[in-house]
Length: 162
Image 1 (cartoon, rainbow, N blue to C red):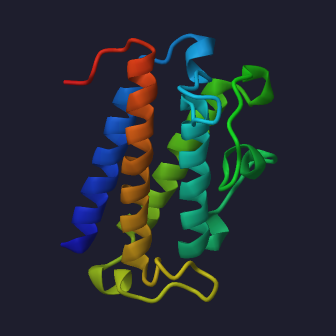
Image 2 (cartoon, rainbow, N blue to C red):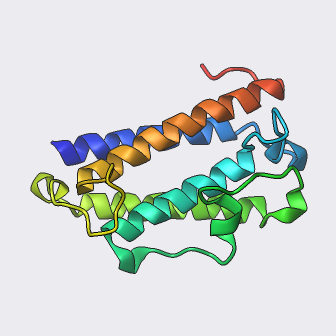
């Protein structure tokens, strides 16, 4: 039951993310910042992928895969810039985000509710005490950053989602 709930919420969060991203079609919109230090859509996409990859590394390190430079561009402490040339191709970053979520969902699909209660390995953040908490954090994290993305969308004149 827990596994199904987590899976459903991870899928729902990503469906919402994909809907938010649909309007970002021109190059400038991907790196538009509401304020000079604000996160932009391309950073958001890369950050979701990097974060999912980190969570994958906690759950099943053999499945982790991070392209060169992505941690520096999209990881914790990275600072978005409004220069599209500073980033990999938009579609490449989008595919990375999507592929990492599919791997994360694949790991979840193989876990029982009992296994979700297992402690995470040494070195995992304290707020990810067990496997279920890793997936809960992924849901919370994506929702939090979606709030930032909605502000960016509105500043570009995109209509709110229905």
